[in-house]
Amino acid sequence: MAADAPTVPPEFDQRLRELLRSDVEFIQLIEDDLISAGGKRVRPRLALLASEALGGVPHALELALAVELLHSATLLHDDLVDDAETRRGREAAFRKYGNAVSVLSGDYLLSRVLFLLAETGRVELVHLFAEAARLLAEGEVLQFQAAAYREYSEAQYYRIIESKTAALMRAATEGAALLGDAPRPLREALAAYGGAYGLAFQMRDDYLDLMGEEARLGKPVGGDVREGKVTLITLWLLEAYPDEVEPILLRRGREPGDVERLRGLAESSGVAARVVAAIEERVEEARRSLAALPEGSARAALEGLALAELERLQ
Ligand code: IPE
Ligand code: IPE
Ligand code: MG
Ligand code: MG
Image (cartoon, rainbow, N blue to C red):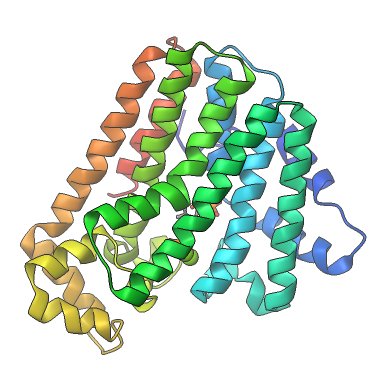
């Protein structure tokens, strides 16, 4: 099955719609926008496939909905703090509805996450999500702190993406193991898979942000440079060519040709290829983690998801 084939069942969208129903028109409008724009539904897919790999676990749908809604809430907040133009191919919500409505609608989504977690009756799952949400907020703030202090390092980069992206992916897969009371080795395998996959996912996103094609990305390249974010590729360029790269990053790629220059340097120096190799390592780590799980279509689909991150680099 193609990795981008829809694998969330129709009940998922139906429950999502029910959960987001509100008689406050502004909330309904913003949530309708978010749902109809779709998104790839990667996180719920992770939760449902992890459940399937374990032979099915109670409340898998609630888990899948909770991760997607926590993710969607962070996107509403993230686009505002990043001053993003678009989300899911549409105008970012805060541009359309204003900052207040956008932030507060994100909070509304978080209230639904709490409801879903309560529905499972599993306090350990609440702990798991509390930790993921803590890391998420911490990662988002750390990214701004790193930019403010211009404190860039590989360790810092990995801490940021582990926190803001991988922690939630890990909660999706580990959450299934928790709900199924899976033996410790299986729980650890699923947690390791989710974490490694999450890192590969964000690293691929960051790589394409500079090296991708505008037509395929649906947004102009160089967004991270304009937002003052240093990712692995610009960090390594900075280390290799400080005199040329530092001024470009300091002026946030504002001069014509700046972003093109970074792309050219990344290609000619082999930095781009090194970043691709680093992503490949994470994908391999994710695949290796799956070895502990029973063979079958769900395990194969999880492997396919990880491999799809490499295909998207092409
Ligand atoms: C976007 O996540 C934020 C990142 C972690 C890069 P997705 O790319 O999964 O967003 P949607 O849900 O498909 O829109
Ligand atoms: C995505 O991070 C948001 C979170 C992971 C919380 P980015 O800001 O890097 O991703 P995009 O580019 O907005 O999707
Ligand atoms: Mg952003
Ligand atoms: Mg961001």
